[in-house]
Length: 264
Image 1 (spheres, rainbow, N blue to C red):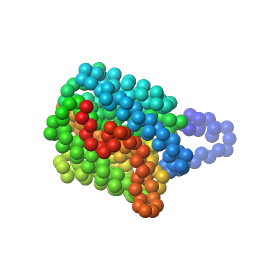
Image 2 (image 1 turned 90 degrees about the horizontal axis):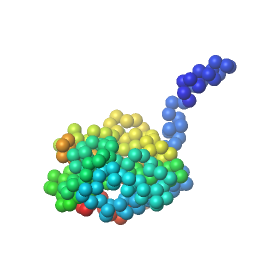
Image 3 (image 1 turned 90 degrees about the vertical axis):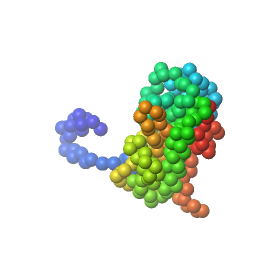
Image 4 (image 1 turned 135 degrees about the vertical axis):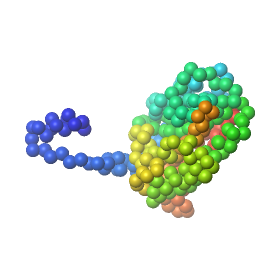
């Protein structure tokens, strides 16, 4: 509650408010099967929209026009609305992790980062794909391959009982060893559910561990000022049990299932 409401309640009686800390946030981390099903549906809508729009991306289209196309495709596929403001960052704008889509026209040779998600019955999806318009340069292939390797390392580390800081370190270490540590400026991921950003937060020095049925994102990135950037993000669910503890991927797209660089 707000400080104002708390003061109003305590001024009329013998109430003694006690802070709950992060009790609610911690309870919400673990989802039941019904919640996971709703998240899966939100992620399915997101992937369907991406698959529909990707073949329509052409030179001359603006970042803003592409963002609107994605939003419309998600709603047409059954989303209540976008889970957040869709990000489209092309060319040098790709070096800005949370770029706002602009009137910049897409051009041949651009890498284009698309961060989008659908909201379905209150649950939020989160997915990022980076594509290239026309034949990619060698540096673009190299950076993409490095981010993909970092994401695989992060996903492999995301098991029940894993410290969230260790999951971040598994992915970040791949990027650090390649000499791009300074170009990965944000945490590896976050929980997702009724809000787009929920506990746990995966990052350096973050407290806490993962548990069974906790949905998270894994989204490493490399951002090169003046050149562009790459981010690959998926929503997955940490699972435990036989035969092996492996995360369940919720965001899949027919055009980028193998996490390979999609050339348009």
